[in-house]
Image (cartoon, rainbow over all chains, first blue to last red; front, side):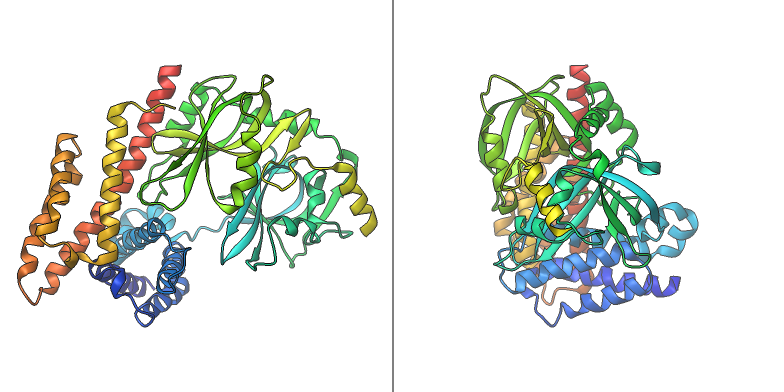
Length: 380
Length: 113
C-alpha cells in the first residue's frame, strides 16, 4: 500500500506542477478527469486529507470551466498548494512514515476520532447562516454542551440543503428536526434546551451529527425551556482578557503550511460592547466587500467585527448597524474569534440582551418563544 | 486594531505577490515574458529590503529560470523547476502571512497587558 501511495502521490505532484505551469486557460473537461481518478485512488489508500483537497480543487476547476461566479481564485490557489504540499510529502512517504510517524498520520488524517455519545444536553448559543449560491444553503448551529465529557464545549451541527431558487436558509427552520421524538420544528431548538441520545461526535472538529444506525433521538428538554440564564451564565467561560488570549496563541495555536489565511482561534464572549462606527471596504483581488464595525468593550484590547458582505450575512450586517451610537452598551456578543491579517477579528454568532439570546443573522432577530412553543404543541 | 505602518506594508507586499501569482496561475507561466516581469523584479528588491530573504531568493531563482524560457521547445526539466519555484513561493507566502499575523497579534496583546 505504501508503494501505491508513493506512486499516486508522485502522479498528483506532477499533475499539479503541470497545472501551475500551463495555467487555468489550458484546463479542459478532459484533463480534469485525472483529478477524479486521483481522488478515487487517494480515498482507497485512506489518504483522506489529500483526497479532500483534491475534491475541492476539482470543484473549483469545474466552476472555472463552467464560467460560474462561484469560482474563487484564492480558494483555487489554496487547494492547489495544499495538494502539492501533501503529494510532495507522500511521494517520498517511506522516509516520512519511518522518521516522523506522527506527522505522517496527521497528513493522512487517518486517526479516527468519531464517537457515539449516549447522552448530550445542548443549548443553541450561536448561528451562522450559509448561502453558497448555486450549491448549498443552510445553517451552522453552535450548541453549548451542558452534560458529560463535552460539557462546556461548543459543538457544531450543520443543517444544509442543496441550493434551489425557491428555498432560503430561513425556510429550513420550519422543517422537522431530524431524529426528533415526537417530531418538532427546527426553530424550536432556538429557544429550548434539547437532549439527544446516540449522537455522532467528531472530537477533532467538535462536530455532531444525527445518525440512523444506531438511531439518534432528539427530545425537547421541557424542564429547562425558557430558562436562558443557565446558558448565558455559561458563556462567561468564553470571556477572556488579553493575557488569556495571548496564552491561547502561544500554547494552543499551531501555524502550518496548510492554514487558511483566516483561522479560528477560539470562541469569545465580549461584554459591554459599544459599536462606534462601521464602514465598507473592498479587498484587492476579491469581489466581495467587507463590513467593519469598530467597537469598544469591557477589556478594551483591540477587536474589530468583520463580516463579508455575502447573501448569508445581510441580516447580520443590518442588525449590527442598528446598535451604532446607542447609549446603553450591548450586554454581550458571542463570537468566533479569528486571526487574520495581523488582527483579531470577530464574527458574531449571537447577541445577549435582556437575558435573551438573539440571533441577528435570522430574518427575525428576536425569537418568539410563545409562537415556537405553540408550533411544537400543534405538531404534538 | 490599528496596525502600524511597517506591518501594514508587509501585509501589502504579500498581497501584491499573491495577486501577481494568481495572474500567473490563470495565464500560465509562459505568459510572463522578460518584458512584463519588471513588477516581479521590483517585488524581489522590495522583499530583500524588508528582510524577507527566503521569499526574495526564491523569486530571484524563478526570474533567472524565466530567462531560459526563450529556448524552444522548452525542456521538460525547466518547466518542472519553474513550477516548483512558483508552488514554493505560494506556500512560503501563505506561511509568512500566518506567522506575521500571529506575531503582530501577540505584540498588540502584550502591549495591552
